[in-house]
Length: 260
Length: 263
Image (cartoon, one colour):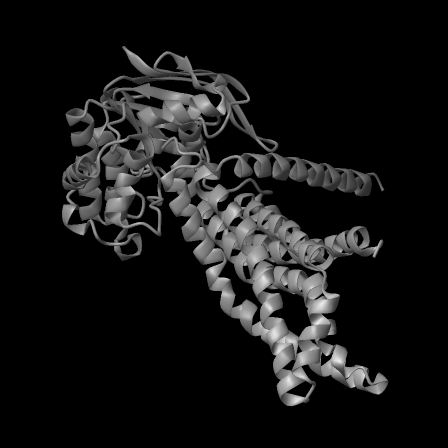
């Protein structure tokens, strides 16, 4: 019994100390990016790795999700003779919910796990230690550009996901199922409000971007520098990011849309 | 003896395990010092303590007059500009070429024009015999070449102190001979203080001016190599002669063999 209490107490202390380390790490990394040409070029390079290279998976997923939404929506809406509202349904679902959430989940799996593995491997091969020994702060040089690249990339990826999804909905709804194109766009324009829907969706994407990238870089930096340690850290990144995104999505939705 | 580093009453604990329990040693300025000892005695830990990557539980590490143990993060980054460290793995940045690896500290800490950086990098690479390999990536280098590039990088800023962590481990005799010669030559040519952690006793003793032997968390022998070879300490003798049994037992602690066999 006493052993059980000691173990629970120790794991609670470990968890709280890990939260504290993650908090200090986050602040140091966020303020660590300087406005020099060198930092800017490093940031652009990371935006390419984290954002541009995630485009393929985002575009393909967005297209298929938009197509499925239109197909499912059509089969329900046609029972009520409201199939003209399919554009509205696809756009609102994507812009408010699926765009930010699915883009964040894909981002965590594609870019987040890659960031953790890369930083973890740099730690295991003593590259971070050697940087420290050269008087260069790895948090500023390695972590900060990756963190900011994630902050910037995910909202853009979520916007692209939603846009491509709407295009997928158009392909299925209009070109395949024969919904009138004018109604598709008109209903969408009438019902999608920039501030309430698009902006709130983008705020969600920004929050998810911060959380997913923070988890990814911290797990890499805090990993045990062995192959097993990196494997555990990469798994943690995907699991923690996915759960955080889904949990935060509920909270943000409750705050943003409860009054509408 | 003019010491560049003085370690006083060093205590360091990792988890529940004590690594150092009151170690005292001096590292002379301008000399090559070899730190030796059985596995797990904290040789690499000592290098990390000197470099400020670890903080001692108790005790002082005086480096050129300043106590590293009390430095904050900013002061540590500043003092490290005067240090170079050669890691056991080389620790080259895998996404940068050989040239860019050596140029890295220069680009980070100086505002030198590009043509001067190029000249310095080529000079450093020439010193380790790898000027011709400047466009290769780290993955294309052999183990010995990796360490030579890392050595060129560690002297890029003309440091006062270079720390070598197991520079000869896993090297073939030719690569080992090259590294032995380079460490000695660079130390004398650049007027460095070199600290060398090694298991390779003949090589380390052949180039060092001063040697320190660690065991059980303290220094058990210290002095010029010739003096150490004459040491009366059984532990020093076992270590220097590579004897399988002695104060460091061959057998892991266990019950009596006969008792175990009878069950």
